[in-house]
Length: 200
Image 1 (tube, helix red, strand yellow):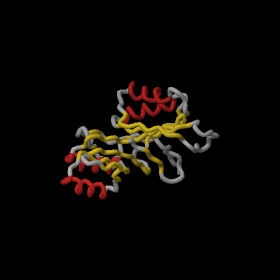
Image 2: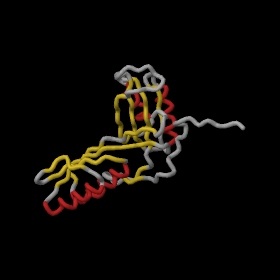
Image 3: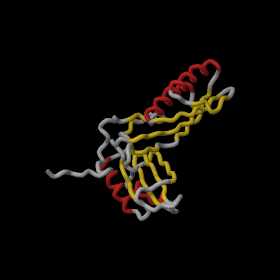
Image 4: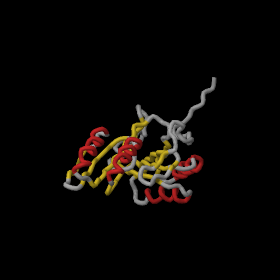
């Protein structure tokens, strides 16, 4: 009996397990997010060329994280020679398929994979600055404790909280803090790693 081999990143459909999401800051409903990882050679201009592929197709990046790739399976890499990009975006899956195919043709891109629906470990970091009085302080600290967030700055009129976890966790955390008056919000963007022995 012939078997069909499905390569990683070959399926571009939206993850059926994830519903459209409401953006926690802008309150706009967006399609489910796609997370793409790229392994690239660490050379000037790579980021610009990758960004141009998205902009030419009218596809917006929600977040972009670039970090050194320390070990590359099957490649004799020296430290600092390769980087890993993690891009989070939402939009039409057919357009995304074309974008990934175009990115894989770029000179310094080793591979590009859409991890939608794959078993991955993902994480994101948020720093939230809140204007806080004595009355609200206890309630805010209870929310922080429930989400395992850390108080990284404790002022007379403000708090800065640091929270790490999956996107949905951070969305819920920020949603609960909005009524107290968020002064500033900074999010790192999503990073991920494929479970098991497969390379991300």
